[in-house]
Length: 104
Length: 485
Image 1 (cartoon, each protein chain N blue to C red):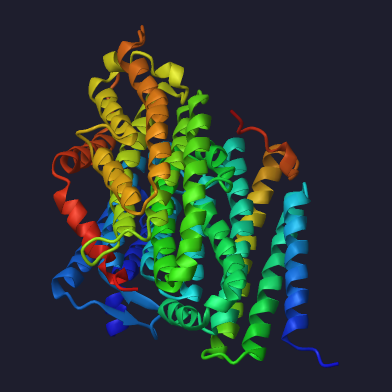
Image 2 (cartoon, chains in turn green, yellow):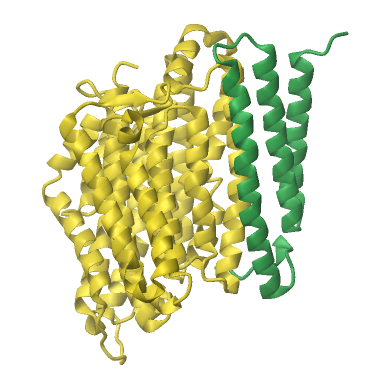
């Protein structure tokens, strides 16, 4: 059996759902970030497999997209870690359940 | 060179941001001029935009991924104006915080450049990058004050924002996989030609796009972050988020859905989704706003409710006027009116919270006796948010309801009118508190920069409330690029 587009897309969607599950269920802010990274990599896998396996007018667009997703994700994580450190200094925890200062 | 000319309005703002950082680094003593460099950059950017309007030579650059057209120009003006007013309103507050002034203005300008790129982006990759260019500075700005509340707001905003952009990206990946291109008009062409049999797949992709953009638009059920971030972030930043970020989200949603997903069979599907979201968003936003005691939280929920009203325009995609789409032009008119009005309200809140050190609505009691002009301006903006004449908000609501009626969405318009009545309860509750409440506190004056900012916004609300025609014309002309799609 040859591995084609379908298999890659299935793996991609499973990864995406796992990432979403992690991001929504983790209580630690770093854990949420890891979930987001998994989701972004699922997106990258999906984009690359589409670019590789389909008759596309613009196959390069998929590859370009992936490079930008990786770059922007790195920038986002840098800011996220800075904010997480800031919060840790303020209250010695990065547990999102403890972020209850802002409530009505 | 030509491409640089086309993105000139954005470049000049980024240059101003760089200049601000350099000035702080080299001439630290002249810190007072930083906001004025920002203002000069914004004015120069608006002038450059005007030069394109005069040249009337609208074009698409970078292989069709970015376009300068009437639609983008409309938003360029809105963003430059909004940022200028926010900068003016933050001078006092930034002075008081003291440190990291250059970074504050540089980040606000960078976010503005991102919003402007978003208005002109015509390609999924460009949209994603522009979205992040505007979002990442806003995450930092929300955590600007570094205290417990502000940092909590920043991290909450970032985590939820990151999840939503991952969902958005997955939707974009599906669209790319289906059409083989990332350029919106091409996507539109492919979907119109061969999309009908793959409608189910497209609906999955559309749903993910709506979820991703819905976060930025602050639409129910993606609104959880709004009250927390609005309350925790520094008030000038909240003003920027509530107006700039939301306007840009609607700008890009209109372009993606009208240009990329405008084919009849799919547009009726997403119009239905938007109609249901509009009804739910208005109702949830208004009901939650009633019970708030903090004015920033109340304005947060009210902005959720306003987002629901915006969505009526998107749901009314089938309503067409004379060569333009009635629904889209209604959204643009609403964006401009809402920008002035909400900004005015937030500027007044900034001024008041600086003097009395509280955001509790109960503390606004008797504000009329302490700062008559300020109270009058805030009251006027709240009246405009409710949608009572003679204000810009009235015409915007009327126009968007008209679009809804033309699209046979009478049920939605009835819900919207009922919601307007509900919203009057809490908006006018603040007005009543200010004018009829009693106080023993001393009167106070506001600083000149905040005064200017407040005067401009209030004058805008009043002028467009009395003479709405120029704004309506501009909105109708801007959406003509979507005609016949």
